[in-house]
Image (spheres, rainbow, N blue to C red):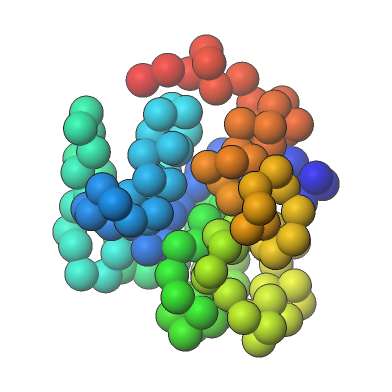
Length: 154
């Protein structure tokens, strides 16, 4: 839970693999940050905006394009082949913490992440049967980090 506390102690968040497809986890996870009134930036090199029902978010193409990467925790919702180069950019940008959603990593991705970030949430654990997931474990993580999102409603 220490890694989750560190992740949610960041003042900013980003979602790599954010999507306009409401059926995809990239959409659902971006919506989770929005619903919790957390400052979030979607990463998507092909879509200029991600449109939620109550807000359109401008995207950035990569972690290097984030406004304050050293103050940003990154949720990853990309296939393993995309995740490794993404994490290499995130490390270069100075991102301190990453949350690798189920299905986004393999052993090489995990090895790189664990060697290059202050906090990594991935794999077994959490309350869901597939491992750590923001949608399942995020509320508890916010509480553990002392973030009162209920007072931050948009």
